[in-house]
Image (cartoon, rainbow, N blue to C red):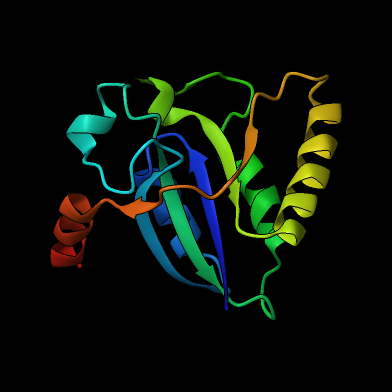
Length: 147
């Protein structure tokens, strides 16, 4: 089992989309890339924590590859808008790939470069080492109660 952590706007829509893909074993919403290892939605919304809303995916690499997940990532959001997706604005809604190891970084760079070439250099998606991931526990619990 492998893990992918992706920021592509508000985490709810992407979390639902990824949960329906064969090979995605588990999804979790959270925050990543910020200054602290723990945060809350209220703190993230201030714009002062540097966290992005993310979807954490546990996936079976025998069924779906990291590269395929990244291609889906680029299909289900607009990687050319800085710090926004649809009606949501703020640094927490940025487009960012958080890699866990060198192999993921290399794959992310390859996929991003391919997409950027197709979009005439307009991609603003960042690629960063995973830092200070924390689950959105207050929202994750509510979500689990609804299932």
